[in-house]
Image (cartoon, rainbow over the protein chains, first blue to last red):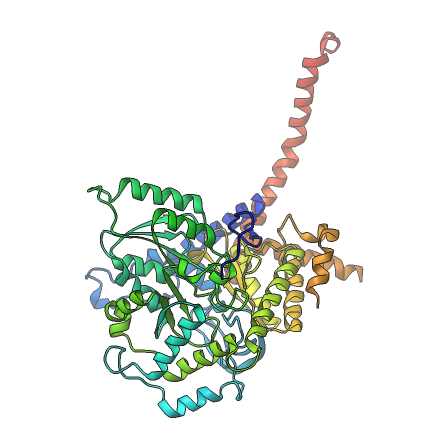
Amino acid sequence: QKNGVSNGTLYKKTFIEHFEQAPMYVAVLTFVGFGVGTIFGYLRDFMRAWGLEKRNIAAEREQQKDFVPLYQDFENFYTRNLYLRIRDNWNRPICSVPGPQFDLMERVTDDYNWTFRFTGRTIKNVINMGSYNYLGFAETDVNALKTVTRELQKYGTGICSTRQEMGTLDKHVELEKLVAKFLGVEDAMVFGMGFATNSMNIPALVGKGCLILSDELNHTSLVLGARLSGATIRIFKHNNMQSLEKLLRDAIIYGQPRSRRAWRKIIILVEGIYSMEGSIVRLPELVSLKKKYKAYLYLDEAHSIGAVGATGRGVVEYFGMSPDDVDVLMGTFTKSFGAAGGYIAGKKGLVDFLRTHSHSAVYATSMCPPVAEQIIRAMKCLMGLDGTTQGLQRVRQLGKNTRYFRRRLHEMGFIIYGNDDSPVVPLLLYMPGKIGAFARRMLEKNIGVVVVGFPATPITESRARFCVSAAHTREMLDTVLNALDELGDFLHLKYSRYSKSSHPELYEETRLELED
Amino acid sequence: MDMKRVKDYIYWLYYQYLLITCSYVLEPWEQSMFHTITVTVFAMVVYTAYVFVPIHVRLAFEFFSQIFGGQPESTV
């Protein structure tokens, strides 16, 4: 397992991340757009308050007008006036399996997105660029789901109990042993819901008097778990190891705020792949920092398990490190395994502690058996235990698709964030008017995308987020890329000043290598 | 054929204006109001430039030429 590191460098392969800034006029125009939206928002609110326009929002009854107000109108200003105008691009109901192509229910609105009605038709075979289906295990092929059907007929669907009472099935024990073997750790525990895994287990691990150092752009489940635990939380800049080291040094030198005692525990919360940026955590530097300052590391591999690494075992394998370096390995089965739920893995002592002390383990209903069987079959496929090389082929196909997609988008001149190897591809749109236009026009071309705007991203950096999948064929990716090319010219989205097509001779060799 | 390309180009410019000023997301009556205000302000700017800019430029030119080489001119 131990390879000699040749000249002591931490990274065994190049770590290239892009976070290009757009030209200044783009930021100015974005603020102009938001300004216009805000002015018209005030105008509409004024008209609604003075009765010149019908009020569609929730309001109290006449008899309750003298009570303490129930609805704080101004706080929902952004939702009511900006989000609502382009609301038809979110919460779109689908009516098929979210594979590489899916069917959408057609929805129209008569009153500018306050209410929707279904026409009854479905839009068929929309190319899916938004589902977290990295390895393509969300499939309905009968041969693939044979074991799942058998378990469904044997166990049914309901568990009707929690893990501590009567909800531990032999399927759970089998799954936990398999997860531990897959990751190369001593033991693992699975939970029914990925979000609840983070938010309910962090309070079990840390409490008052402990210090949590969490990345700026961590997911809500990690933030919620950290806040519920009652520990002190300090934030370091995204993926910035100098900022983290400064915080660690200050924590150890100065101790707790008033009593100056040493912290009971220092834990660092990071994610493997950040889903809004597409960046990968700098794990080698992080592990060396953690060992130097004697802190604990909690790695949330929700998006990276199955998606990066030579055999799909996540960021730990991607950087060639051993899983013993990370104290708590957490992940979800929602993304790469086509199921639902989460796991926590690590040393046997840690997992045994969590079995008795975690809220999720004690009170939450356990994972249902057909879903557990789906994860077992997906993991066996990935590890090669079902006798085929299909798992490895899927991981390689995902890697090829990711590199091809990112390279073509860079060449076309779009601004893309993130690491070159991450299957999450955010394409920056910047202006609020373009968010709605982009999503609607892509749907007209039969491609379904996810666009994200203000509260989830910084105000100037709204984006469209693509999730590349191993189930996408080269033709599908080419269709999407041609549509993006056309739309990029029509909406004027190609802001990059470093597009590679200006230096074709430097990239000839890599282009020949990747086109196979 | 040329007319179509010109019309498409003008439509593209109009669409860019809609996207940049975020008036793409507004309802039709709000869009009309916004376009009226924008066109009015733009017309006023153009008119002011037409009336005032040539006179100011001529005066500035006279002022600077007086400083740098103005002695023969003042005696006449």
